[in-house]
Amino acid sequence: MDLFASAWMTRSLGESVSAVHLEQGGGIFAGGWNGNLKHWDAEGELVWTATLPDRITVLAIHEDLVFATAGLHVVCLEAATGDQRWSHALEGSADSLYPFKENLYAVSSVYDIEHNDFLESAVWNFSFDGTMNWIQRMDERPWTIQEFKGKLYFGLGRPKCGFSAIDSQGTITHNSVKTDSPITCGSTKNSAMLFGHANGAVSNQKGKVIFLEQSAIELLHATPEGYVAALEDGTLLSRKAKIEQWSAAGSTVNVQSSGFSFQGNQTHWAGRWSGSQGSIEIRNIDSGTLLVLTQSPRCESIASDSTRVALGFENGEIRLWERSMFERRLLSGHEIEEKNERKSALQDKLRALRDR
Image (cartoon, rainbow, N blue to C red; front, side, top):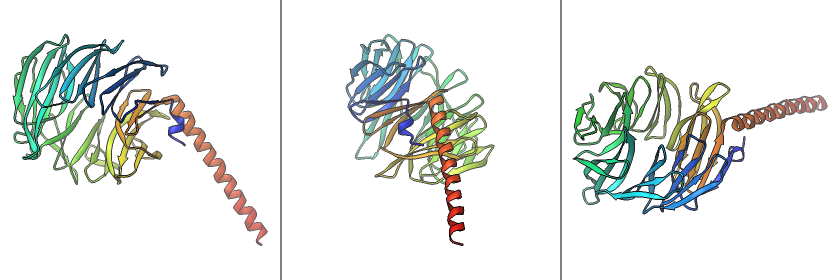
């Protein structure tokens, strides 16, 4: 199947795409390296365009508001019009944000080139009207923000490592993990919160290391019974109850996500980059069976829900796939393959008869 030809929608941001977000009502938001932000509706029509101060790395939607990180700034816009409500410059780069219980939590960090390390990080709390409520500074950089069982957690780097809960007043409760390796990524599911570490460990909300992979965990996606991890060495693998279900070697995995189901089985989407060539791999998330493999520009961002998957690329393209159309195209492609195989087998038999 020609994956790109089967996309339900293709749009251009006009610059390298650095963030995509799917709207519940069917629309899509995309932000770029130079601060361009666009919103398309469920029919693919452009609703509005906005220009933010710098590269957009994270997008989040809460009711009628759009929140974005843009360089040093956290910006709030009207979802319906793109009009800016407020903007705050943080101390250092605005790394991430998370709307939680009527407040916006943002993470900033200051990086020192001479020391090749982060000097200080901070968690900021804003009301949705733009009022800054408090700042909690720390030596450790929070690499991941996760919501689990009504609380907000941050996975931390050195020196403290481990993970911390933070409440609405900025009070931090630290939890250690049975490894001194910094947390690099994380993911949650109904029953567990998982963290990936620089030494290859995967730990849970109890601070227990549940498995030690062969190299650093770059990306982690929690599944109902385990996880899919992208490792620093290019390995993509799935585990259930510590047992490896499948693995695939290759170049660096830039993005990964679960996707809509195909013939009753959930899919897994991953974008790789070799340094000169990109690729998209779509698999059955349970068996690892490769459904689609296609070359692509470098994929920078991914978003998915139960019926759609959106990818943002370095060349400025945003591609969106819809479940029913994807399934029709993939099944028709399989039918053509089977017909070609039967035709080829028949031709081989005819040639064999002629050569007698």
